[in-house]
Length: 77
Image (tube, rainbow, N blue to C red; front, side):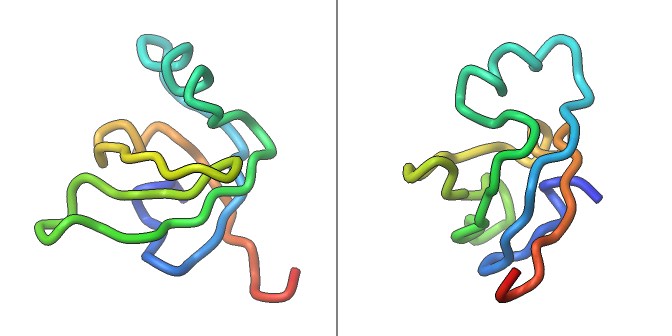
């Protein structure tokens, strides 16, 4: 599952970043393996998406989000 598959209100944990050309940029934004990410909302047409990571809001395009492998975090976990 990738970050682009996560719906608003859901929380996930990053397991892998699968791109070479965007890898450094994604890591510089604080999106590293093991980081918890919450999807806050999607734009009206579904792109971009607004996420909460490390206490701040970040906007990502779906083309960037599809390179970030995640696992959903269940409520209360």
